[in-house]
Structure formats: structure tokens, C-alpha cells
Amino acid sequence: MTTAHERALTVEELKADLTLEQLQQLVGLVEYDEHNDVFPVTGWDAIVFVVGNATQAAQYYQSAWGMELVAYSGPEHGNRDHKAFVLRSGSTRFVLKGAVDPDSPLADHHRRHGDGVVDIALEVPDVDRCIARAHEVGATVLEEPHDLTDEHGTVRVAAIATYGETRHTLVQREVDGATYAGPYLPGYVARTSSITRKDGQPKRLFQALDHVVGNVELGRMDEWVAFYNKVMGFTNMAEFIGDDIATDYSALMSKVVANGNHRVKFPLNEPAVARKKSQIDEYLEFYRGAGAQHLALATNDILATVDALRDNGVEFLDTPDSYYEDPALRARIGQVRVPIDELQKRRILVDRDEDGYLLQIFTKPLGDRPTVFFELIERHGSLGFGKGNFKALFEAIEREQERRGNL
Ligand SMILES: [Fe+2]
Image (cartoon, rainbow, N blue to C red; front, side):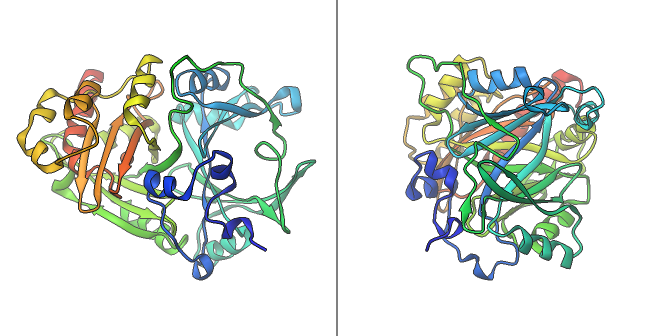
């Protein structure tokens, strides 16, 4: 019998009608044998946000980002502490939590960090095996493995600490041969959206989650790379140091780790010494420490996605015309699937490496603080992260930083 973790696709990917070929293109999925993996990870389970007003944030992600409401937990169903809304787009699942009880720990978390990612939950085939490894190498285990059960079945969960106050909840959705059949986790009820999609907008604006970037404190990047290598068996994908990511004012260092099948990719940034305050320093100051900086959402049509998002009021970082008119850029990127002026019109960036190219664009910060934001990414063979765009991107961020008085 084939078990869920031996199938090439996850339950969420199958539900979203995604194929293996699509995922290879969208997020660079690769084949791998988990049997020798000390800490096998299947993929993302959910990105859990703490926000100041989950009721309104849930509306925003539905109306602006085209996400679909699938589950809910709150006071009406016995959860007196907070409200939680579960939204999906393709195989991506976001959970938005906001405190109801003023004494909720989520209210304290929000006061310190503002809107942000509290949990990068990962789907694993064997929670106990992962936690045994975590103990063996001295990782911080926040929750020991335990079962959560309701009328839809059982999931087995545990949690380990990562950078800042961020955690990885590990979720095993198949226990004793039975896959959990509820809308999210025990305690959540199914809930559907009352929001209708605008005419002419794509069925969904993104299909999968590509990577989540962590900003960590100065001098601690290698420590967190070692954590993902040693505890979770992640491998290093690419490395950018020093001049690669420096402008006149701002600099950072970045390394990327990935799980065996490359569904889960974590670039880790730390600030580097520069003439003025780095964008990473600004994040660390306003988030009060290390945390998730941006989430890259994979789309197979970034032009249609960006048009729809702009139409829905989402704001993106601007890119100067000089970026598109630069002959060096034109020579470097060669032919891409659309004329460059189509990209220029939308301020979409393009980068090429030995494997292919990618198109990408970044939003402005999502909340009140200059912290978490999104990237849209359309990959065409490239497994990179837009290294060639970092300078143009950072200059755009710095213009925003300057306007906020934080440069
Ligand atoms: Fe990125």
C-alpha cells in the first residue's frame, strides 16, 4: 500500500489539482528518498500569522489575494482565547489568529511583534522520528509529540523552536494508516467564504508557497544554517555574501537551506555592516528580534496575478525605468516569455542563471510595521532567488526606508 508520504504529491496539492510537472516548474520540486533522512519533511503544512484583527485580515486575504476560507475556530465553538481563520490558495494554507481575550498570549505576542508569522508549520511523515532527532542533537523541543483527535480523525503534532519567537509545528496527518479528514486540525470547523471573485480574475492568484525568508541577528546566520543542517537535515542551496547584496547604504548576507524535495526553502539573512542602517536592521528593530521577513508565493502567470492584485489594491515596490533600460540587464536576461515592456509596465523583475530564468515582484510591508511582506515568483527553470535583482530591489526598499525616516 502507498502511504501519503510516499506519494509524490501531498494531500493539499492533490486537492488543488496540481500535477508533479506543475510543481517542478512552480517551486523546483525534486525527487528524493526520505528513507535515509534523519528528519524527513514532506512540505509546508501552514503558515500561521498572529495579527491585530484576524476578522478583518481574513477578509483582506480573501478579497485582495483571492484566498478561499476553509476553516474557523473561535468563541462560538468553545475557543474563548482567539479567533482563527484558515485560508487556502492552491496548496498554500494560511492561518490567521487574533486575540479575543485581552489576556491571550497572542495579544502579548502582537504587542511585541506586530502582525507576523508565529509558526512555519511543516508536514512530516513521522513526528516521533523528527523529535527523537531534535532531542539527540539538542534542539529546543517546545511540544513533545501528542495526538489531537476529533470526529474527523487524528493528527499527531509536536513543535520545535527556530529563530526569534518563531516555531516549527510538525504535523503528521496520517496516523496508524488513516489520514485526518477534517478541514484543518481538530477543534476547527469547516467554514466557506461569502466573498465572490471579481469577473475576469484568475481562479487563484497563486498556486504554492516557494520559500520563507528568515531575518536573524548580526552574526547569527551561520548558527541557524547549522541548525537546519544538523537538526533537520536540510542542505545548502546557494550562498550570497558581501558584495553580492550591497548597495551604497545597505548590506546583508544570506544563505539558503532546503529540505530533501526542495518544497521547503529557507533563505536566512543577517545584516552586514554598511554606511547606513540595513533593511534587515530595520526589520529586527520593528519586529523586536528575528522573524520571518517574506513569503514567496509561486504563480504560473505573474502578469495576470499582479494585474489582479493591483486591481484589488495591493501595493508593490517600485522599480525604476532605468532597471529595464539598462543594456546590461537586457543582455543578461536574453529572451523571456513576454516582451520586457510588459514587465516594465508592471514593475516585474527578471533574473537568469545557468538553469533558466525567473520573474518576481515584492509587495510593500503587509501591516503597519516595516516587517513582513510577500514576493510573487514565476519560475522558468531557475532554482535561484533573484540574486541579480538584489541590488535593484534593495535600492527600491531603501527609497521606502528613507520615506519612513529609517535609513
Ligand atoms: Fe525571496
